[in-house]
Length: 251
Image 1 (tube, rainbow, N blue to C red):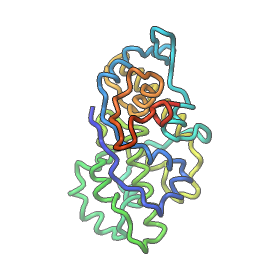
Image 2: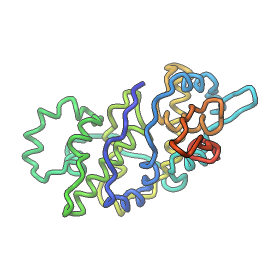
Image 3: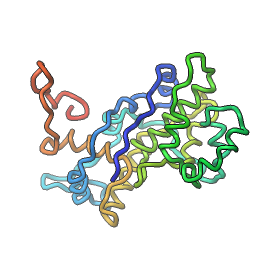
Image 4: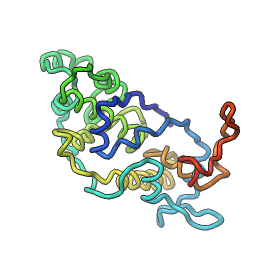
């Protein structure tokens, strides 16, 4: 499993837009390294029939409250759904591409081969072409495009990552396209939890590798299973931190 860090910075000018979308808090989640042995162990304990982990002490599972606590995503609102039919190239240009010159977009078409393929956008291309912060005097349309780039990177790395973790489906762009002030209040927490359940079901029955929001699963395990928590070095002059009182390690 690859672990891709989020690299598109959240500009202060788009903070209000992210709050409106319900994606502000999750931008504060820091990157952690993959703990593959722990993820594999969690798959072994998972039972798809009940969507719970079967431990020796009883059953446990990830809940909507956990998603809200660990990821900061709301668990109320409109179900997350999107049109998966293309073509997507024109929608990508209209909603993401930072240049108004349509001719330039078409002239660069050959250089995009392999980066925008079918329904997928490579995260590397997204970061290089759409993840550069707009200038200080940029109009609102440019800030909207930049916000969409941040949202797509979140979808591809933290919320709905696929097995490759180096691309994001273009149809997620439908969720944040158009006027951002008119985007519905989507239930991101419910969609994230469903994605995790599906990933665990598939891993336990076939793939043995957790895809989906695996970082959420790590945070959950560290929160509820102290024996799984990584060792944290003392902070200079402050001593050993109390993990039971800090997010995402404890309550």
